[in-house]
Length: 180
View 1 (cartoon, helix red, strand yellow):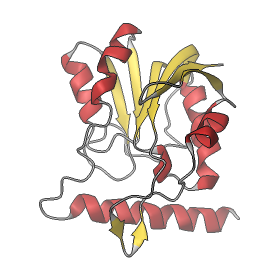
View 2 (tube, rainbow, N blue to C red):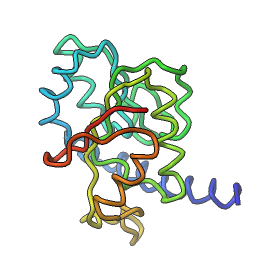
View 3 (tube, rainbow, N blue to C red):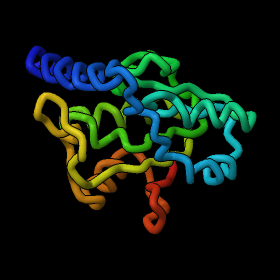
View 4 (tube, rainbow, N blue to C red):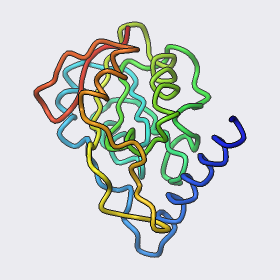
C-alpha cells in the first residue's frame, strides 16, 4: 500500500505544482487565515507553523506583526519548508500555535490522521491550533480532477481533530482548540 499511497501523493502534488507554475497564476495566494490574526495574536505565540501555507501570506503577515513562524507546503516555492504536511522534518515541540487554512481538505483521506499526528508532534504541549477547512468540492479542477479529495462535514473533521486535541470553538469560521 505504501507504493500506491506514494503514487497518489505524487499525483496530488503534481496538480498543485501545475497550478503554481501557470503564468500569472494567483492560486495559493488567498489568505484564508486573514481573520485569524487577532485570534493568534491573543495567544501570544513565540513560534507558529502554518501547514499548507500556499504562497505563505499568513506567516509573512505574522512576521510583520513581530511573530516568528514557518510555512510548510509541498508545491509552492514561497513556502519556508517545501515538504508534505505529514513529514515536515521539524523538531518535536517547537511551535506554540499550529495553523492550517483551506489546506486539510486537499489531503488524501489516508493522510488526515498522519498530518494531525505530525502537527501534534511539532506542537509544544498544550499548543493552540486554528484551522479553516472547506466542506465543499473545489471550484477549481486540474486534469479534470477536484482539488478537495477529502470533502467531509465539519462534524467529521472535528472528530478527527479530537483524536489529537480538544476543540474549544465551534461557532466561528475557524476550528480552534489545544493539542492534548
